[in-house]
Each structure stands twice: as C-alpha cells, then as structure tokens.
Image (tube, one colour):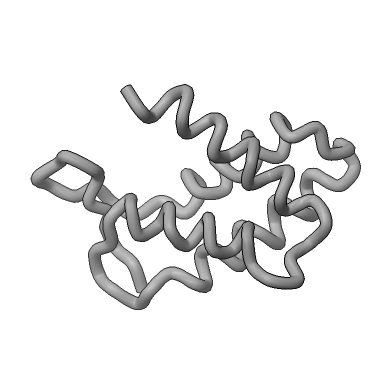
Length: 99
C-alpha cells in the first residue's frame, strides 16, 4: 500500500491522498466533453483501476503515478471515451504543470 508521494523536485514526501487522483480524473472527464451522465461512472471506474494498479511501495513518485494514469487510459481495449479523457488530462498537465 502506498503511504506517501514524493513530488517532482521535492526532497520530502507528503501523504498519499487517493482523492487527488480522483480529482485529476474528474477534471479531465469534465474537460473532455463526455456526457455528464457518464462522468460519475467513468470517474469511479478509472480511479479504481489507477489506484489498484499502483505498485505496492510505501513511497511513490508523482512520475510513477503519472505513468500508471497514462497506461490505464491508453490500454488496449480501453473504454471508448478513454482516449478523449487521456487527451484532456495531458492537455491540462501541459498547461498547468509544465511551468
């Protein structure tokens, strides 16, 4: 089980909060233009897949979490909307996290 996250460029870690991943996925779904009636279900399913796919390490980097999100959203046989969600998630990341 993951207990802490080492952020990029940081020397200390912070507690692992799965809701931060959920929030990121929710934002990508909202920005992707997916019908609102599907948003809750997709958020739940993708969040579960990402969190359950994290390696069982006590501490994980944000880069490792990012890799799992990308892998989950681009996996073979993924849900029809996943490409749209991945594109929106990566666009958000480029705009707000690259600075």
